[in-house]
Length: 236
View 1 (spheres, one colour):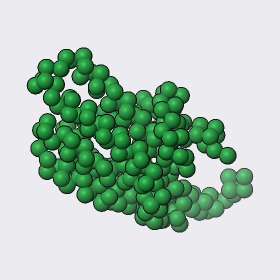
View 2 (cartoon, helix red, strand yellow; view 1 turned 45 degrees about the vertical axis):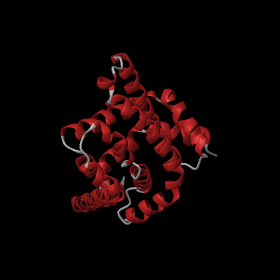
View 3 (tube, one colour; view 1 turned 90 degrees about the vertical axis):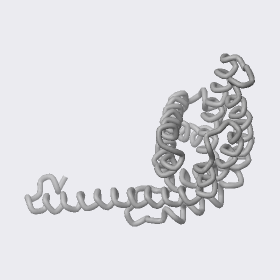
View 4 (cartoon, helix red, strand yellow; view 1 turned 180 degrees about the vertical axis):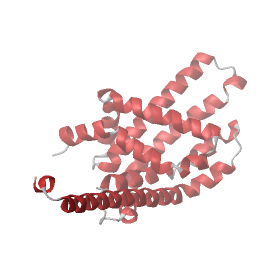
């Protein structure tokens, strides 16, 4: 109230203070995003290098899926670090939060990530040999739908495992439950999946990895309704 009715100089000083605060928050957010992006890129590098070098051949489909093993824990750590960032300009610890998230979540995430990749590998082989094996087109369509559903489930599971402390089977059940309970989240994640596939198809996996933090931030943003319900309904 006082600042609104104060002198012009006081109002100018107040505006300058607010402006500096906003600039500091923006700078802090950019710094955190860039730091997490670099760490995410480094974490997936062991799989990214051979993945980029692999030819896009049907015979290499299982190897390509195997190269995705480091992605799960890396994305989980990125989600954890981004969630922990509160916008405080004085709290610049994204690297420490990324490392903490990786340490806390890697084992739990891999318990869901590895079976998901195994199923994805089988489906990738089936799709790669559709023409040569004479498999009907309708069967290929079913496999694609199942692969998309599995990926949307995995996206939910990644968020839940990264931000909450549930047993593996409970996290898996919650991820499946919220596919239907929060359809806006599933739709948003489907859009992210389409964009990611488009980036890989038009450019390469390396470009997708380079902007990985953007996808992680978008995933976290899209999942907010699910995160809110998990917090309210399933945590004390």
